[in-house]
Structures are given as structure tokens and as C-alpha cells.
Image (cartoon, rainbow, N blue to C red; front, side, top):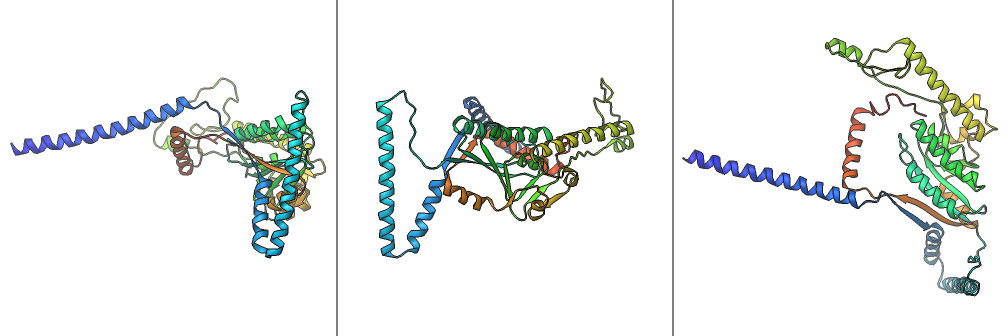
Length: 359
């Protein structure tokens, strides 16, 4: 009798735990589905004045370092400048009310610089945000404005970085000057983007170049045969599949695969040569990379500096704004991203990159 009582108690506890787990899972699922339903699929565009941020830093620094007398004069000069600016804005608003059909802008002696940050991964999924940022800039920029892209990427899939480079070409097509800064690395697909710039600047030890193409994949055919496992693959077309992970590869397929990589390399070299015609493409398109000091000598870049100094120089002559497109990740997206990152670290992108050329 005691046994039955203890068993019943244990069973009740087990059922309670199971029900609690199911309830939690259902709550998470309901929340995720609700967020997914509420999501419009659109992100948020954030534009911030970097000039104001730099002015605030400069103002604070000067206040901390000057004497009381100098501080009074500093405040007096700043108050005069603020009054003049407010007066100009008031006159502009008054003119707009008098002539509502006339396009009126606030007087300014400075053009604008739009700053975009691009940190690319292997699959170049960041290009979706880049295209939104560039579209926003092109909707308001004039030929007097400029764009600065802070670029960091070691390269990735050809089609992804080809599209990213095309997005930068949209800026030049509108006769807007484009500057690209590289502090750490712009190699392979990253350099495919960077070479589009009117002016390409990098830090002394940034990694530049690697104008080459690579594709790699494992083959488990011998392992399958050893364990008496058969693998079948059916295709229509002689070269629908040149190399395979599980099937038996042959010399004909390898030759075709190598030829396709060479074709991509030819297109890559032609693209770089079109954007930097003074470059000796035969000398640098070997798949090697160079540090900034060497890249300058090879004409892979135009100047050596950090993005910080470039920004400070621009701030003297431009009103500087950062442009960032961000999309809120919901619960399902975060869980999926975490799982993907774990699998990528564990299996080294085995299947995702198996037959995708990497620039």
C-alpha cells in the first residue's frame, strides 16, 4: 500500500513537471509568434550628428583645460555664434512662410558628409542594411555632399560582395564623392568593395588585397564505402554538379570546377582594374595580401591614415552625420542566430560553403 502511495505521488510530481515545461514552451512559442506577426519586416533608420558629438567633446575638453578668464571668453564667443545661427534659421523660416512654394534651406557654409559603417561576414548578409542606408543617403544627398564608408571585411561569397560593391557604385553613379577607410582589413571581397572608392585610405598595418578566389569542401565518399553506405545523386546536365561532398569525384568534374573558379578570378581582376586603372593588376592579383604600408607602394590604396583622423579632417569642412539601418531581432531570430553560430563554429560551415566561391 505504501508502495502504491509513493508511486502515485512520484507520478503526480512527474506529470506536474512535464506540464510546467510544456506550459513554458507554449508561452515562448506564443510570444515568438506574436512578435513575428507584429513585425512588418522593416527596420529603423537612425541618423545622428557626429559633428555635434565631436563639438560636445571639444567643448568639454576646452572647459576642463582653460583658465576662468579664458572660459568666460569661450562662453561669450559661443553665445554669439549660437545667436547668429538662430537668427539665420528664423529668417529662413520667415522666408518659407512668405513664399511657401519656394524651396528654402537653412543657410550653411558646409556640405554634408554621410558616414556608413560596414563590417562584413562571410555570407555578406550585412548588405541588406547597406542598401537601405545608401538608398536613404541618395534620397537627400546632393553633388556637394560626400559619403564615407568605414569598411572591415576579410571577404566572403562572390555574389554577396558583388552586390555590396554594386551598392557603393550607386553613390558614384550619382556624382557623389565616395571615400572608403580601412582600419583593420579589406581583403578579397572586402577589397572588391573598397576599390570602388574615389579615395581609398587605410591604416599602416591594415590588411589589404588578396585578389583571388577560393572554394573548398571535404569528401566523405571513402568513409561511406568503408561502412558499406551507398550514396546516390542524379542530375540532368553534365555539369549540374561538378564536385560533391558524399559522391565520388572525378578529374573531369575537378577540371570544370577549377575552370569556373578561374572565370570568377578573371571577372574579379577586371572589376578591380576598371575601378583602379593605374594598378598593375598582374602584380597584385595573386591572391596575396599586403599590409597598409606595402599596399600604398603597390597603389592598392591612395593614402595612409586612420578613420578617426579622416573623420576629424572632414569635420572641419563638413557637417558630419552617421547613417545606420538596424532591424530589431525577435525571439525566434535570436534563437535561430545562436543555433546557427554554434553550428558554424562546430562544423566550420561544411555545407553552407561547400560549393560557393569565396572572394
